[in-house]
Image (tube, rainbow over all chains, first blue to last red; front, side, top):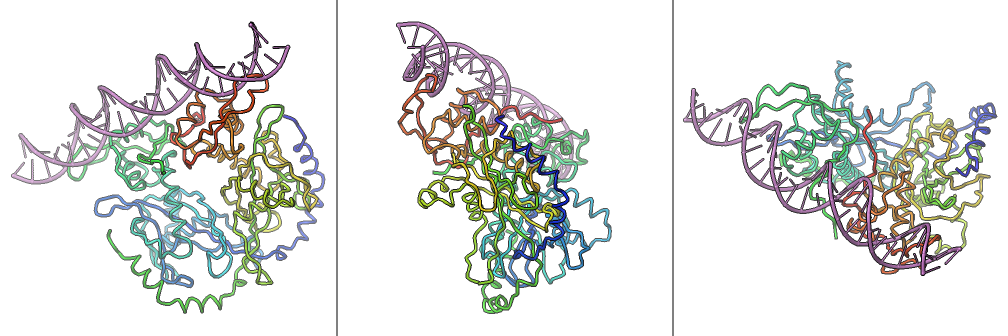
Length: 288
Length: 288
DNA sequence: CTGAGAGTTACTCGACTTGAGTAGAACTCC
DNA sequence: GGAGTTCTACTCAAGTCGAGTAACTCTCAG
């Protein structure tokens, strides 16, 4: 490289005045700067069977407080700053806050069996979706919301929350976007688009099913998220030919299908983090 | 649909008490909540020719203030809340803040020719990369940074900033990640990974070149970002066969290459927003 | 217990895409 | 004019895709 030497200078400057840096920090007053509120919102998706058809559901909360009382919103809440008035509180990272919100709204936080709760939450896949900070999106004040996307296998039905809020798993096709609180309709749409493309090039569909599953169950996840039926034989071939997607357990289901049919082989999630080749959505035609 | 009726109830509740909602809002005091600082950081990438090889560069700032004085950092700054002390200030959206940071650091903001500046900045592609909020990432206080990724065609060399800071386009392979300020090394790595995969399935490579360009220039963008040479004939074929990627202008370059060679056809960016089929990176083999 | 129907898995086929190589076209420099 | 360079067109074998067919193995009804 040309070596204008940024790294060398950085080394020197980074090591010679640690004491001065420490002095600066102890004299620093965070209150000089004006505040902005930060929240974490979660788009939690799961597959639930409605009238024997597997359907994509999202966890929503009916707001019990102003603003937007009575409207559906994504579960979420304010993030606490690093130094509280007592100075003793350990602060939570953003993903931790997202997990906490999810646990609270699904009622898992209230459970007495801590080990069982941890086991269930450990299976939830969580990734950051994006941050929404347009002025005016919250009528109270300037709020920056960090949205997270969660894929969960069959979490329990939510129990009533503390703030007179009601949480529920709602089928995504039934959500009235025009009457959601804040800009949550847009966040939900972004989440659904992200979820759809995540299934294409990662093995994350396994996050929606039990630890042991059949290829058909996996296909039902894809069909529910993409909203279209897939060709079963081709899906089967592609899943098995993608290295590291699934691992054969050797076992099969105890029974065939409800109305007859062969017993299906059971698989568990493989070790791959990316799918090669990817499973592309059919019919993604070009506009114009 | 099952019709538990979320949308119907939401309609009712959303329309019948607007007056009460307005009353609530006017009585609302934002200062009740504790503050968290929010910043916007920009990872601006461009291609510059170094010793006749096109090389990926990132815009970095050598910090003129504590903490991390003298270290390289991403350009960025604090976001201002919606209601200032004067109550009159119009607040900026997050992407606007990112563009402003970029304009300030490249010296474009100082230019007198506003129309020329706008034209150059309009060609910059900007997307949100992610938000970084781990406690302790800024030693001063709890700071949430919203990072943006920018692709720019040949912006001017930065001029000296106001805070005794020096900005420069630095070749990404020469960046010493161990001595960057805050967690900016991680943000940079995330940005490079995102940029690489964006080139695969979107036509955004065109954001790095002039409005009219040759296929070879486009290939050099891919080679610089992916860090590996590509098979020229195959690249040519794939670009032309992806609908909406490029449009033929009918013209050619005025001269052949510096050391001889045919004149190249000139293209401009097409209208597609997604590439079908995608241009996948070669040699993305499976780990383990 | 037997046949019909259903669910799972294996196989086939033509169309298309891919990576690698070859070759021709068009240009600059000497 | 010739050598070397750059751009573009073409070929070919291997692999992948969508669609269809069919075999295998269960459940259920009669």
